[in-house]
Length: 196
Image: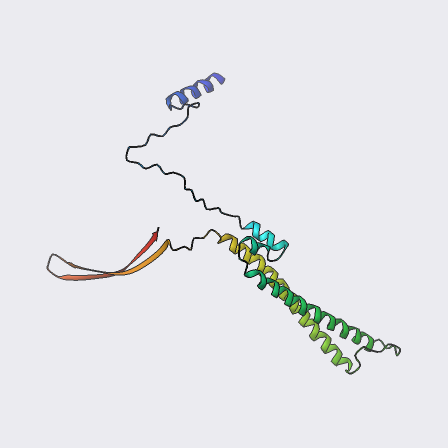
């Protein structure tokens, strides 16, 4: 069995004219053009890198993608929603403690805000809680937008938007004569995409 395998492999290599130890050379016809490697190599980056960078530190992926104008927008959104969260959280905690002190049935505790009834304190507490929660949602949205934007810019970093691309749409008309000397017209659109 081993001899059969050895002989069949030997004949296969012999008949297929395969030389395992020789360098392959390509013979080109005399009219073919040999292309030299381009001196300008487009460096493609992985979109994962700016995505991770933006997840670690917001705006870092935009800096990596060289979109510097987006960083102040991201940080103004984060700072604005962060400040809105902080103010509403402080007010929520103040009204929460006033509601607890109002309903604890202990005459020695006086609510910090005594101008309102218990229902009004509860309503104001819920209002500030809602505003605080909306600010937290805004923070998360700005943070996720930062990551998604870095990923999309990473994907489109190598997208060619230069003047070397052109799309030309031209109407065309063809008038022809058939065998009975009748004239017919055909209309259409010609779409040409040029890569220069």
